[in-house]
Length: 152
Image (cartoon, rainbow, N blue to C red; front, side, top):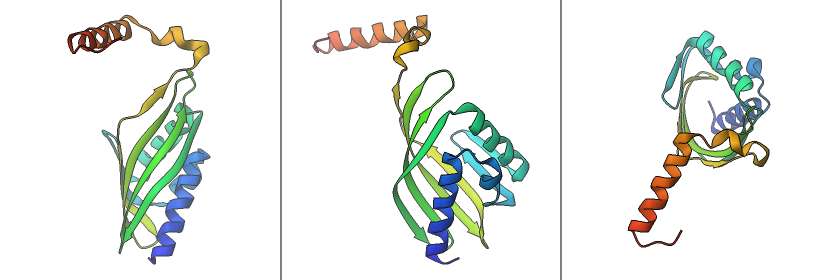
């Protein structure tokens, strides 16, 4: 594939993900492709289809913004930021890298790795997120700040 064709394919894939268009997402992958999404690996078009459908069900919003894209022969590496929101009100920003291997005109392998995300909670549902675990975690962080001489 030519570099401009790879760039166009990746941009179209990101648009399909943003639009949660599972059928379009699948059109970019070979039948025997593999997709790694964080710790999860989906092998073959049927498993990738499950991923694409779950993506649509688990995210109200998943907007990609490309930060950089480097193409080398039949591979590409894309750094991105994704603005997300979930049905339970959780909103955040995910940063990550997506590595692609192409065969012919389609994706053979796609490895998506995430960096640390920035979570922003829905102010209308903030109580839903303050479980005992979260309260204990906050107490531990405050205690650590005190022992390091930082003000709270």
